[in-house]
Image (cartoon, rainbow over all chains, first blue to last red; front, side, top):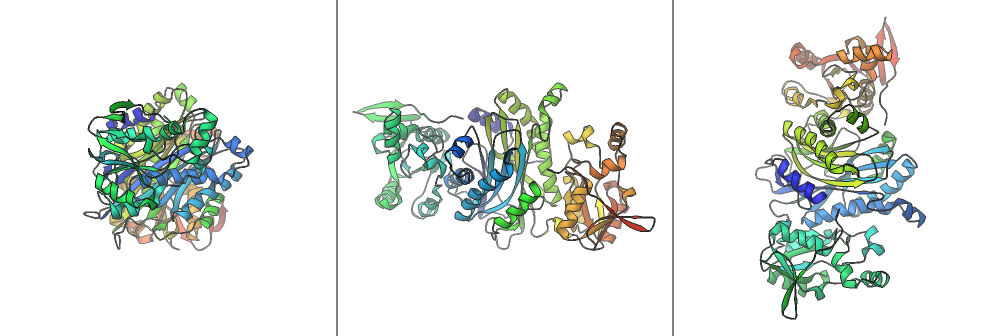
Length: 309
Length: 309
Protein backbone atom coordinates (compact mmCIF):
# COMPACT_ATOMS: atom_id res chain seq x y z
CA UNK A 1 0.00 0.00 0.00
CA UNK A 2 2.74 2.47 0.88
CA UNK A 3 4.09 2.78 -2.68
CA UNK A 4 0.75 3.35 -4.36
CA UNK A 5 -0.38 5.73 -1.66
CA UNK A 6 2.82 7.72 -2.01
CA UNK A 7 2.13 7.97 -5.72
CA UNK A 8 -1.33 9.37 -4.93
CA UNK A 9 0.20 11.80 -2.48
CA UNK A 10 2.82 13.04 -4.90
CA UNK A 11 0.01 13.92 -7.25
CA UNK A 12 -2.21 15.41 -4.56
CA UNK A 13 0.33 17.61 -2.81
CA UNK A 14 1.34 20.67 -4.68
CA UNK A 15 5.02 21.43 -4.77
CA UNK A 16 6.17 24.50 -2.95
CA UNK A 17 9.33 26.40 -3.74
CA UNK A 18 11.12 25.52 -0.51
CA UNK A 19 10.98 21.75 -1.07
CA UNK A 20 13.74 20.75 -3.48
CA UNK A 21 13.08 17.01 -3.21
CA UNK A 22 9.73 15.81 -1.89
CA UNK A 23 7.91 12.54 -1.39
CA UNK A 24 9.50 9.48 -2.99
CA UNK A 25 13.17 9.50 -2.03
CA UNK A 26 14.83 8.32 1.18
CA UNK A 27 14.40 11.80 2.63
CA UNK A 28 13.12 15.22 1.67
CA UNK A 29 15.49 18.05 0.76
CA UNK A 30 14.37 21.50 1.84
CA UNK A 31 15.88 24.92 1.35
CA UNK A 32 16.74 26.43 4.72
CA UNK A 33 15.21 29.71 5.87
CA UNK A 34 16.16 32.57 3.56
CA UNK A 35 19.82 32.20 2.78
CA UNK A 36 20.06 33.21 -0.88
CA UNK A 37 21.36 31.07 -2.45
CA UNK A 38 21.72 28.52 0.35
CA UNK A 39 25.11 26.86 0.78
CA UNK A 40 23.56 23.86 2.39
CA UNK A 41 20.09 22.34 2.36
CA UNK A 42 18.06 20.66 5.04
CA UNK A 43 17.38 16.95 4.77
CA UNK A 44 14.42 15.51 6.69
CA UNK A 45 12.99 12.03 6.98
CA UNK A 46 10.61 10.16 9.25
CA UNK A 47 10.14 6.46 9.84
CA UNK A 48 8.46 4.52 12.60
CA UNK A 49 8.65 0.99 13.94
CA UNK A 50 5.71 -0.77 15.59
CA UNK A 51 5.35 -3.80 17.84
CA UNK A 52 3.76 -6.62 15.87
CA UNK A 53 4.76 -5.12 12.53
CA UNK A 54 8.47 -4.35 12.72
CA UNK A 55 9.42 -6.21 15.88
CA UNK A 56 7.82 -8.47 18.48
CA UNK A 57 7.95 -6.94 21.94
CA UNK A 58 6.83 -10.10 23.76
CA UNK A 59 9.48 -12.16 21.96
CA UNK A 60 12.23 -9.70 22.82
CA UNK A 61 11.15 -9.70 26.44
CA UNK A 62 11.02 -13.52 26.58
CA UNK A 63 14.52 -13.65 25.13
CA UNK A 64 15.68 -11.14 27.72
CA UNK A 65 16.72 -8.71 24.98
CA UNK A 66 16.97 -5.09 26.10
CA UNK A 67 14.26 -2.79 24.74
CA UNK A 68 17.03 -0.27 24.18
CA UNK A 69 17.65 -2.18 20.94
CA UNK A 70 14.28 -1.02 19.58
CA UNK A 71 15.03 2.60 20.41
CA UNK A 72 18.44 2.32 18.81
CA UNK A 73 16.90 0.76 15.72
CA UNK A 74 14.24 3.47 15.37
CA UNK A 75 17.07 6.01 15.21
CA UNK A 76 19.32 3.84 13.00
CA UNK A 77 16.76 3.28 10.23
CA UNK A 78 16.31 7.03 9.92
CA UNK A 79 20.06 7.66 10.06
CA UNK A 80 20.36 5.16 7.22
CA UNK A 81 17.95 7.27 5.15
CA UNK A 82 20.09 10.33 5.86
CA UNK A 83 23.20 8.37 4.79
CA UNK A 84 21.41 7.30 1.59
CA UNK A 85 20.99 10.99 0.74
CA UNK A 86 24.73 11.57 1.23
CA UNK A 87 23.80 13.92 4.07
CA UNK A 88 24.90 14.46 7.67
CA UNK A 89 22.41 14.11 10.53
CA UNK A 90 22.02 16.87 13.12
CA UNK A 91 18.91 16.52 15.27
CA UNK A 92 15.92 14.30 15.93
CA UNK A 93 12.33 14.53 17.14
CA UNK A 94 11.09 11.37 18.82
CA UNK A 95 7.47 10.27 19.29
CA UNK A 96 6.77 7.37 21.61
CA UNK A 97 3.33 5.76 21.64
CA UNK A 98 3.15 3.46 24.60
CA UNK A 99 0.77 0.72 25.72
CA UNK A 100 -0.85 1.59 29.07
CA UNK A 101 0.76 -1.38 30.78
CA UNK A 102 4.35 -0.71 31.87
CA UNK A 103 4.40 2.56 29.95
CA UNK A 104 7.01 4.25 32.11
CA UNK A 105 9.37 1.27 32.21
CA UNK A 106 9.10 0.71 28.46
CA UNK A 107 9.63 4.41 27.73
CA UNK A 108 12.75 4.48 29.88
CA UNK A 109 14.25 1.36 28.34
CA UNK A 110 13.49 2.37 24.76
CA UNK A 111 14.87 5.84 25.39
CA UNK A 112 18.19 4.39 26.55
CA UNK A 113 18.71 3.09 23.01
CA UNK A 114 17.55 6.35 21.45
CA UNK A 115 19.96 8.35 23.57
CA UNK A 116 22.74 5.84 22.85
CA UNK A 117 22.27 6.32 19.10
CA UNK A 118 22.04 10.09 19.55
CA UNK A 119 25.35 10.12 21.40
CA UNK A 120 27.06 7.76 18.99
CA UNK A 121 26.14 9.83 15.95
CA UNK A 122 26.22 13.23 17.69
CA UNK A 123 22.58 14.03 17.19
CA UNK A 124 20.58 16.32 19.44
CA UNK A 125 17.15 15.14 20.59
CA UNK A 126 15.40 18.44 19.91
CA UNK A 127 11.88 17.46 20.86
CA UNK A 128 9.14 14.91 20.61
CA UNK A 129 5.82 13.69 21.87
CA UNK A 130 4.69 10.91 24.21
CA UNK A 131 1.27 9.28 24.46
CA UNK A 132 -0.12 6.21 26.14
CA UNK A 133 -2.95 4.36 24.45
CA UNK A 134 -4.71 1.08 23.97
CA UNK A 135 -2.34 -0.25 21.32
CA UNK A 136 1.12 -1.62 20.63
CA UNK A 137 4.41 0.19 21.27
CA UNK A 138 5.31 2.48 18.36
CA UNK A 139 8.40 4.63 17.98
CA UNK A 140 8.46 7.33 15.36
CA UNK A 141 11.59 9.36 14.66
CA UNK A 142 11.98 12.42 12.48
CA UNK A 143 15.59 13.13 11.62
CA UNK A 144 16.93 16.41 10.36
CA UNK A 145 20.26 16.67 8.62
CA UNK A 146 22.09 18.74 6.07
CA UNK A 147 23.78 18.45 2.73
CA UNK A 148 25.65 20.74 0.34
CA UNK A 149 23.08 22.40 -1.90
CA UNK A 150 22.05 20.25 -4.87
CA UNK A 151 24.55 17.58 -3.87
CA UNK A 152 22.17 15.11 -2.22
CA UNK A 153 22.28 11.56 -3.61
CA UNK A 154 18.89 10.96 -5.20
CA UNK A 155 17.45 7.67 -6.35
CA UNK A 156 16.83 9.25 -9.71
CA UNK A 157 20.38 10.25 -10.63
CA UNK A 158 21.80 7.03 -12.10
CA UNK A 159 23.25 7.25 -15.63
CA UNK A 160 23.43 4.54 -18.28
CA UNK A 161 26.81 2.83 -18.02
CA UNK A 162 27.27 3.67 -14.34
CA UNK A 163 28.64 1.01 -12.06
CA UNK A 164 26.31 -0.36 -9.34
CA UNK A 165 27.97 -0.98 -5.99
CA UNK A 166 26.86 -2.29 -2.66
CA UNK A 167 28.61 -1.05 0.48
CA UNK A 168 28.78 -4.40 2.27
CA UNK A 169 27.50 -7.97 2.55
CA UNK A 170 23.72 -8.46 2.55
CA UNK A 171 21.33 -11.18 3.71
CA UNK A 172 20.44 -12.94 6.92
CA UNK A 173 20.24 -9.81 9.08
CA UNK A 174 17.27 -11.42 10.83
CA UNK A 175 19.72 -13.57 12.79
CA UNK A 176 20.58 -10.53 14.88
CA UNK A 177 22.18 -7.69 12.95
CA UNK A 178 18.73 -6.22 12.21
CA UNK A 179 18.39 -5.27 15.89
CA UNK A 180 21.46 -3.08 15.89
CA UNK A 181 21.85 -1.89 12.31
CA UNK A 182 24.82 0.28 11.40
CA UNK A 183 23.76 3.18 9.19
CA UNK A 184 26.57 3.77 6.70
CA UNK A 185 27.10 7.39 7.67
CA UNK A 186 30.81 6.58 7.85
CA UNK A 187 30.90 6.32 4.05
CA UNK A 188 29.33 9.67 3.21
CA UNK A 189 32.45 11.79 3.63
CA UNK A 190 34.99 9.41 2.04
CA UNK A 191 32.71 8.79 -0.94
CA UNK A 192 32.17 12.52 -1.42
CA UNK A 193 35.91 13.14 -1.29
CA UNK A 194 36.89 10.49 -3.81
CA UNK A 195 34.04 9.91 -6.25
CA UNK A 196 30.87 11.36 -7.66
CA UNK A 197 27.94 9.27 -6.46
CA UNK A 198 25.17 9.61 -9.05
CA UNK A 199 22.37 7.78 -7.16
CA UNK A 200 21.89 6.01 -3.85
CA UNK A 201 19.32 4.13 -1.77
CA UNK A 202 19.60 2.21 1.47
CA UNK A 203 18.73 -1.48 1.64
CA UNK A 204 15.79 -1.65 4.00
CA UNK A 205 13.39 -3.95 2.13
CA UNK A 206 15.91 -6.13 0.26
CA UNK A 207 18.76 -5.67 -2.23
CA UNK A 208 16.69 -6.52 -5.29
CA UNK A 209 13.61 -4.54 -4.28
CA UNK A 210 15.56 -1.43 -3.34
CA UNK A 211 17.78 -1.65 -6.43
CA UNK A 212 14.61 -1.96 -8.51
CA UNK A 213 13.31 1.24 -6.89
CA UNK A 214 16.54 3.10 -7.65
CA UNK A 215 16.39 1.91 -11.26
CA UNK A 216 12.72 2.86 -11.60
CA UNK A 217 13.39 6.34 -10.18
CA UNK A 218 16.21 6.75 -12.72
CA UNK A 219 14.08 5.29 -15.57
CA UNK A 220 16.85 2.80 -16.25
CA UNK A 221 17.64 -0.85 -15.52
CA UNK A 222 20.47 -2.95 -14.13
CA UNK A 223 22.56 -5.80 -15.49
CA UNK A 224 23.90 -7.69 -12.53
CA UNK A 225 26.74 -10.09 -11.94
CA UNK A 226 24.92 -11.84 -9.11
CA UNK A 227 27.97 -13.92 -8.21
CA UNK A 228 29.63 -10.70 -7.07
CA UNK A 229 26.98 -9.91 -4.43
CA UNK A 230 28.84 -10.13 -1.12
CA UNK A 231 27.25 -12.66 1.24
CA UNK A 232 27.81 -12.55 5.00
CA UNK A 233 28.12 -15.61 7.29
CA UNK A 234 24.58 -14.82 8.55
CA UNK A 235 23.10 -15.56 5.13
CA UNK A 236 25.00 -18.87 4.93
CA UNK A 237 23.81 -19.85 8.38
CA UNK A 238 20.22 -18.80 7.70
CA UNK A 239 20.24 -20.79 4.44
CA UNK A 240 20.91 -23.96 6.42
CA UNK A 241 17.72 -23.31 8.41
CA UNK A 242 15.44 -22.22 5.60
CA UNK A 243 16.37 -24.41 2.65
CA UNK A 244 16.92 -21.31 0.51
CA UNK A 245 20.37 -20.58 -0.89
CA UNK A 246 22.59 -17.90 0.67
CA UNK A 247 22.28 -16.01 -2.64
CA UNK A 248 18.50 -16.00 -2.34
CA UNK A 249 18.80 -14.49 1.11
CA UNK A 250 21.24 -11.87 -0.19
CA UNK A 251 18.84 -11.06 -3.00
CA UNK A 252 15.73 -10.52 -0.94
CA UNK A 253 16.40 -10.19 2.81
CA UNK A 254 15.68 -6.77 4.24
CA UNK A 255 17.10 -4.63 7.01
CA UNK A 256 20.76 -4.73 6.11
CA UNK A 257 20.97 -0.95 5.87
CA UNK A 258 23.91 -1.11 3.53
CA UNK A 259 23.71 1.35 0.63
CA UNK A 260 23.38 0.75 -3.08
CA UNK A 261 25.31 3.49 -4.89
CA UNK A 262 25.96 4.22 -8.53
CA UNK A 263 28.90 6.08 -10.03
CA UNK A 264 30.93 6.15 -13.23
CA UNK A 265 32.86 2.99 -14.05
CA UNK A 266 36.17 4.79 -13.53
CA UNK A 267 35.07 6.09 -10.11
CA UNK A 268 34.00 2.54 -9.20
CA UNK A 269 37.39 1.16 -10.16
CA UNK A 270 39.14 3.83 -8.11
CA UNK A 271 37.04 3.20 -4.98
CA UNK A 272 37.06 -0.61 -5.14
CA UNK A 273 40.85 -0.72 -5.64
CA UNK A 274 41.09 0.51 -2.04
CA UNK A 275 39.33 -2.51 -0.53
CA UNK A 276 39.30 -1.09 3.00
CA UNK A 277 35.95 0.55 2.37
CA UNK A 278 34.30 -2.76 1.51
CA UNK A 279 32.44 -1.50 -1.58
CA UNK A 280 31.80 -4.13 -4.22
CA UNK A 281 30.62 -3.61 -7.78
CA UNK A 282 27.70 -5.92 -8.53
CA UNK A 283 26.57 -4.67 -11.92
CA UNK A 284 26.06 -1.90 -14.42
CA UNK A 285 23.21 0.52 -15.14
CA UNK A 286 21.55 -0.24 -18.47
CA UNK A 287 19.15 1.59 -20.73
CA UNK A 288 16.78 -1.36 -20.67
CA UNK A 289 14.55 -1.14 -17.58
CA UNK A 290 14.28 -4.02 -15.12
CA UNK A 291 16.85 -6.20 -13.41
CA UNK A 292 18.87 -8.53 -15.65
CA UNK A 293 21.62 -11.11 -15.45
CA UNK A 294 23.97 -12.42 -18.14
CA UNK A 295 24.04 -16.24 -18.01
CA UNK A 296 26.08 -18.21 -20.56
CA UNK A 297 25.83 -15.42 -23.10
CA UNK A 298 22.08 -14.94 -22.60
CA UNK A 299 20.46 -12.11 -20.67
CA UNK A 300 17.68 -13.27 -18.34
CA UNK A 301 15.29 -11.16 -16.35
CA UNK A 302 15.49 -11.26 -12.56
CA UNK A 303 12.53 -10.74 -10.34
CA UNK A 304 12.84 -8.24 -7.49
CA UNK A 305 11.83 -9.78 -4.19
CA UNK A 306 11.76 -8.41 -0.71
CA UNK A 307 9.67 -7.01 2.05
CA UNK A 308 6.68 -5.12 0.71
CA UNK A 309 4.82 -2.91 3.18
CA UNK B 1 3.47 11.27 32.64
CA UNK B 2 4.56 13.46 29.77
CA UNK B 3 5.80 16.33 31.94
CA UNK B 4 7.91 14.22 34.27
CA UNK B 5 9.28 12.17 31.42
CA UNK B 6 10.24 15.34 29.57
CA UNK B 7 12.10 16.47 32.67
CA UNK B 8 14.01 13.18 32.70
CA UNK B 9 14.77 13.59 29.02
CA UNK B 10 16.03 17.12 29.38
CA UNK B 11 18.53 15.82 31.89
CA UNK B 12 19.43 12.73 29.90
CA UNK B 13 19.95 14.33 26.50
CA UNK B 14 23.05 16.35 26.15
CA UNK B 15 22.74 19.69 24.49
CA UNK B 16 24.40 20.13 21.16
CA UNK B 17 25.48 23.42 19.71
CA UNK B 18 22.94 23.42 16.88
CA UNK B 19 19.88 23.25 19.15
CA UNK B 20 19.15 26.72 20.49
CA UNK B 21 15.93 25.71 22.28
CA UNK B 22 15.36 22.03 23.06
CA UNK B 23 12.78 19.93 24.86
CA UNK B 24 10.25 21.82 26.95
CA UNK B 25 8.84 24.60 24.79
CA UNK B 26 6.10 24.47 22.15
CA UNK B 27 8.74 23.70 19.53
CA UNK B 28 12.49 23.30 19.18
CA UNK B 29 14.65 26.04 17.69
CA UNK B 30 17.57 24.82 15.65
CA UNK B 31 20.36 26.67 13.87
CA UNK B 32 20.15 25.97 10.16
CA UNK B 33 23.04 24.36 8.27
CA UNK B 34 26.18 26.50 8.45
CA UNK B 35 25.13 30.05 7.88
CA UNK B 36 27.33 32.05 10.27
CA UNK B 37 25.66 33.77 11.99
CA UNK B 38 22.25 32.57 10.79
CA UNK B 39 19.68 35.21 9.91
CA UNK B 40 16.86 32.85 10.62
CA UNK B 41 16.51 29.70 12.66
CA UNK B 42 14.59 26.52 12.08
CA UNK B 43 11.62 25.75 14.28
CA UNK B 44 10.48 22.12 14.56
CA UNK B 45 7.70 20.44 16.51
CA UNK B 46 5.87 17.14 16.47
CA UNK B 47 2.52 16.14 17.91
CA UNK B 48 0.25 13.20 17.25
CA UNK B 49 -3.43 12.45 17.75
CA UNK B 50 -4.76 8.96 18.38
CA UNK B 51 -8.18 7.35 18.13
CA UNK B 52 -9.46 6.62 21.63
CA UNK B 53 -7.16 9.20 23.22
CA UNK B 54 -7.61 12.44 21.30
CA UNK B 55 -10.73 11.64 19.29
CA UNK B 56 -13.25 8.81 18.87
CA UNK B 57 -13.25 7.45 15.34
CA UNK B 58 -16.40 5.36 15.80
CA UNK B 59 -18.28 8.35 17.20
CA UNK B 60 -17.24 10.58 14.31
CA UNK B 61 -18.30 7.93 11.82
CA UNK B 62 -21.67 7.43 13.54
CA UNK B 63 -22.24 11.17 13.44
CA UNK B 64 -21.32 11.20 9.76
CA UNK B 65 -18.46 13.59 10.42
CA UNK B 66 -15.79 13.59 7.72
CA UNK B 67 -12.47 12.02 8.77
CA UNK B 68 -10.83 14.93 6.98
CA UNK B 69 -11.45 16.83 10.23
CA UNK B 70 -8.95 14.61 12.03
CA UNK B 71 -6.29 15.17 9.40
CA UNK B 72 -6.91 18.90 9.52
CA UNK B 73 -6.67 18.87 13.29
CA UNK B 74 -3.37 16.92 13.32
CA UNK B 75 -1.90 19.68 11.18
CA UNK B 76 -3.59 22.51 13.09
CA UNK B 77 -2.31 21.51 16.53
CA UNK B 78 1.23 21.57 15.21
CA UNK B 79 0.66 24.86 13.38
CA UNK B 80 -0.54 26.24 16.69
CA UNK B 81 2.79 25.27 18.27
CA UNK B 82 4.60 27.08 15.47
CA UNK B 83 2.41 30.15 16.06
CA UNK B 84 3.18 29.97 19.79
CA UNK B 85 6.88 30.30 18.91
CA UNK B 86 6.15 33.41 16.82
CA UNK B 87 7.39 31.47 13.81
CA UNK B 88 6.19 30.80 10.26
CA UNK B 89 5.50 27.23 9.10
CA UNK B 90 7.05 25.91 5.89
CA UNK B 91 6.82 22.14 5.53
CA UNK B 92 5.45 19.02 7.18
CA UNK B 93 6.23 15.32 7.47
CA UNK B 94 3.15 13.19 8.09
CA UNK B 95 3.05 9.70 9.59
CA UNK B 96 -0.21 7.74 9.37
CA UNK B 97 -0.63 4.59 11.41
CA UNK B 98 -3.75 2.83 10.20
CA UNK B 99 -5.90 -0.01 11.48
CA UNK B 100 -5.96 -2.92 9.01
CA UNK B 101 -9.67 -2.54 8.41
CA UNK B 102 -10.51 0.14 5.87
CA UNK B 103 -6.91 1.36 5.85
CA UNK B 104 -6.99 2.79 2.36
CA UNK B 105 -10.32 4.57 2.77
CA UNK B 106 -9.31 6.04 6.11
CA UNK B 107 -5.93 7.15 4.79
CA UNK B 108 -7.56 8.88 1.83
CA UNK B 109 -10.18 10.67 3.96
CA UNK B 110 -7.70 11.76 6.62
CA UNK B 111 -5.30 12.97 3.97
CA UNK B 112 -7.94 15.21 2.46
CA UNK B 113 -7.89 17.23 5.68
CA UNK B 114 -4.11 17.21 5.85
CA UNK B 115 -3.85 18.51 2.31
CA UNK B 116 -6.57 21.09 3.00
CA UNK B 117 -4.57 22.47 5.95
CA UNK B 118 -1.37 22.36 3.91
CA UNK B 119 -2.98 24.41 1.17
CA UNK B 120 -4.63 26.85 3.55
CA UNK B 121 -1.40 27.63 5.36
CA UNK B 122 0.91 27.15 2.33
CA UNK B 123 2.84 24.26 3.75
CA UNK B 124 4.58 21.64 1.66
CA UNK B 125 4.08 17.99 2.61
CA UNK B 126 7.73 17.06 2.27
CA UNK B 127 7.51 13.42 3.32
CA UNK B 128 6.15 10.91 5.75
CA UNK B 129 5.55 7.31 6.58
CA UNK B 130 2.54 5.00 6.44
CA UNK B 131 1.98 1.73 8.30
CA UNK B 132 -0.98 -0.53 8.90
CA UNK B 133 -1.16 -2.38 12.20
CA UNK B 134 -3.38 -3.97 14.77
CA UNK B 135 -4.20 -0.78 16.62
CA UNK B 136 -6.11 2.49 16.48
CA UNK B 137 -5.70 5.24 13.89
CA UNK B 138 -2.84 7.58 14.80
CA UNK B 139 -1.69 10.65 12.92
CA UNK B 140 1.67 12.16 13.73
CA UNK B 141 2.82 15.40 12.15
CA UNK B 142 6.23 17.01 12.30
CA UNK B 143 6.16 20.65 11.29
CA UNK B 144 9.15 22.70 10.24
CA UNK B 145 9.10 26.45 10.24
CA UNK B 146 11.36 29.41 10.61
CA UNK B 147 11.89 32.44 12.78
CA UNK B 148 14.28 35.39 12.89
CA UNK B 149 17.32 34.32 14.90
CA UNK B 150 16.86 34.62 18.66
CA UNK B 151 13.42 36.15 18.14
CA UNK B 152 11.29 33.08 18.91
CA UNK B 153 8.66 33.53 21.61
CA UNK B 154 9.69 31.24 24.44
CA UNK B 155 7.63 30.24 27.45
CA UNK B 156 10.50 31.39 29.63
CA UNK B 157 10.72 35.03 28.56
CA UNK B 158 8.02 36.71 30.69
CA UNK B 159 9.15 39.64 32.85
CA UNK B 160 7.72 40.81 36.16
CA UNK B 161 5.15 43.53 35.47
CA UNK B 162 4.38 42.26 31.96
CA UNK B 163 0.76 42.18 30.87
CA UNK B 164 -0.80 38.76 30.23
CA UNK B 165 -3.10 38.60 27.22
CA UNK B 166 -5.19 35.96 25.59
CA UNK B 167 -5.80 36.13 21.84
CA UNK B 168 -9.48 35.17 21.92
CA UNK B 169 -12.36 33.60 23.86
CA UNK B 170 -11.70 30.25 25.52
CA UNK B 171 -13.84 27.38 26.78
CA UNK B 172 -16.35 24.93 25.38
CA UNK B 173 -14.37 24.03 22.26
CA UNK B 174 -15.58 20.45 22.74
CA UNK B 175 -18.93 21.51 21.26
CA UNK B 176 -17.30 21.54 17.85
CA UNK B 177 -14.53 24.09 17.48
CA UNK B 178 -11.95 21.53 18.65
CA UNK B 179 -12.43 19.59 15.41
CA UNK B 180 -11.39 22.49 13.22
CA UNK B 181 -9.10 24.59 15.35
CA UNK B 182 -7.69 27.80 13.93
CA UNK B 183 -4.00 28.15 14.74
CA UNK B 184 -3.33 31.83 15.40
CA UNK B 185 -0.67 32.14 12.73
CA UNK B 186 -2.51 35.26 11.55
CA UNK B 187 -1.32 37.08 14.67
CA UNK B 188 2.40 36.37 14.37
CA UNK B 189 3.22 39.08 11.86
CA UNK B 190 1.00 41.87 13.28
CA UNK B 191 2.24 41.20 16.81
CA UNK B 192 5.87 41.25 15.67
CA UNK B 193 5.30 44.53 13.85
CA UNK B 194 3.64 46.36 16.70
CA UNK B 195 4.85 44.97 20.03
CA UNK B 196 7.59 42.95 21.68
CA UNK B 197 6.11 39.64 22.81
CA UNK B 198 8.18 38.43 25.76
CA UNK B 199 6.66 34.95 26.18
CA UNK B 200 3.97 32.82 24.56
CA UNK B 201 2.27 29.44 24.75
CA UNK B 202 -0.73 28.01 22.96
CA UNK B 203 -3.79 26.85 24.87
CA UNK B 204 -3.99 23.15 24.18
CA UNK B 205 -4.63 21.73 27.66
CA UNK B 206 -6.56 24.64 29.22
CA UNK B 207 -6.02 28.35 29.89
CA UNK B 208 -5.01 27.89 33.52
CA UNK B 209 -2.78 24.87 32.97
CA UNK B 210 -0.96 26.40 30.02
CA UNK B 211 -0.63 29.78 31.75
CA UNK B 212 0.80 27.95 34.76
CA UNK B 213 3.38 26.32 32.46
CA UNK B 214 4.38 29.67 30.97
CA UNK B 215 4.74 31.13 34.47
CA UNK B 216 6.75 28.12 35.69
CA UNK B 217 9.09 28.34 32.69
CA UNK B 218 9.60 32.05 33.45
CA UNK B 219 10.02 31.39 37.21
CA UNK B 220 7.28 33.93 37.85
CA UNK B 221 3.58 34.00 38.68
CA UNK B 222 0.40 35.64 37.47
CA UNK B 223 -2.18 37.88 39.10
CA UNK B 224 -5.37 37.54 37.11
CA UNK B 225 -8.49 39.55 36.68
CA UNK B 226 -10.60 36.47 35.95
CA UNK B 227 -13.64 38.55 35.04
CA UNK B 228 -11.72 39.74 31.99
CA UNK B 229 -11.26 36.26 30.52
CA UNK B 230 -13.25 36.31 27.28
CA UNK B 231 -15.90 33.61 27.19
CA UNK B 232 -17.40 32.34 23.92
CA UNK B 233 -21.03 31.28 23.42
CA UNK B 234 -19.82 27.64 23.38
CA UNK B 235 -18.74 27.88 27.01
CA UNK B 236 -22.12 29.38 28.00
CA UNK B 237 -23.94 26.64 26.17
CA UNK B 238 -21.75 23.88 27.58
CA UNK B 239 -22.27 25.25 31.10
CA UNK B 240 -26.00 24.66 30.74
CA UNK B 241 -25.29 20.98 30.06
CA UNK B 242 -22.58 20.38 32.66
CA UNK B 243 -23.67 22.41 35.67
CA UNK B 244 -20.30 24.14 35.75
CA UNK B 245 -20.10 27.89 35.20
CA UNK B 246 -18.98 29.33 31.87
CA UNK B 247 -15.96 30.76 33.73
CA UNK B 248 -15.00 27.31 34.93
CA UNK B 249 -15.05 26.08 31.36
CA UNK B 250 -12.96 29.04 30.22
CA UNK B 251 -10.49 28.33 33.01
CA UNK B 252 -9.92 24.68 32.28
CA UNK B 253 -11.23 23.53 28.89
CA UNK B 254 -8.56 22.51 26.42
CA UNK B 255 -8.13 22.66 22.66
CA UNK B 256 -8.94 26.30 22.05
CA UNK B 257 -5.58 26.92 20.40
CA UNK B 258 -5.67 30.58 21.23
CA UNK B 259 -2.35 31.95 22.46
CA UNK B 260 -1.37 33.36 25.83
CA UNK B 261 1.19 36.11 25.26
CA UNK B 262 3.03 38.45 27.58
CA UNK B 263 4.39 41.89 26.78
CA UNK B 264 5.08 45.18 28.53
CA UNK B 265 2.06 47.01 29.92
CA UNK B 266 2.51 49.81 27.40
CA UNK B 267 2.67 47.37 24.50
CA UNK B 268 -0.49 45.70 25.83
CA UNK B 269 -2.30 49.02 25.95
CA UNK B 270 -1.23 49.80 22.40
CA UNK B 271 -2.39 46.47 21.00
CA UNK B 272 -5.69 46.24 22.89
CA UNK B 273 -6.65 49.81 21.92
CA UNK B 274 -6.99 48.41 18.39
CA UNK B 275 -9.72 45.91 19.26
CA UNK B 276 -9.84 44.37 15.80
CA UNK B 277 -7.20 41.83 16.78
CA UNK B 278 -9.29 40.50 19.65
CA UNK B 279 -6.50 40.41 22.23
CA UNK B 280 -7.63 40.87 25.81
CA UNK B 281 -5.49 41.55 28.85
CA UNK B 282 -6.40 39.14 31.64
CA UNK B 283 -3.70 39.85 34.20
CA UNK B 284 -0.15 40.77 35.09
CA UNK B 285 3.06 38.82 35.61
CA UNK B 286 4.13 38.86 39.25
CA UNK B 287 7.29 37.95 41.15
CA UNK B 288 5.34 35.60 43.38
CA UNK B 289 5.00 32.22 41.63
CA UNK B 290 1.60 30.57 41.13
CA UNK B 291 -1.71 31.87 39.80
CA UNK B 292 -3.50 34.51 41.91
CA UNK B 293 -6.61 36.61 41.90
CA UNK B 294 -7.40 39.83 43.78
CA UNK B 295 -10.84 39.54 45.43
CA UNK B 296 -12.19 42.34 47.61
CA UNK B 297 -8.66 43.53 48.42
CA UNK B 298 -7.36 40.06 49.25
CA UNK B 299 -5.17 37.95 46.99
CA UNK B 300 -6.30 34.34 46.74
CA UNK B 301 -4.53 31.47 45.06
CA UNK B 302 -6.10 29.85 42.01
CA UNK B 303 -5.63 26.23 41.12
CA UNK B 304 -4.60 25.40 37.56
CA UNK B 305 -6.92 22.83 36.02
CA UNK B 306 -7.02 21.26 32.64
CA UNK B 307 -6.23 18.23 30.56
CA UNK B 308 -3.19 16.38 31.91
CA UNK B 309 -1.66 13.77 29.61
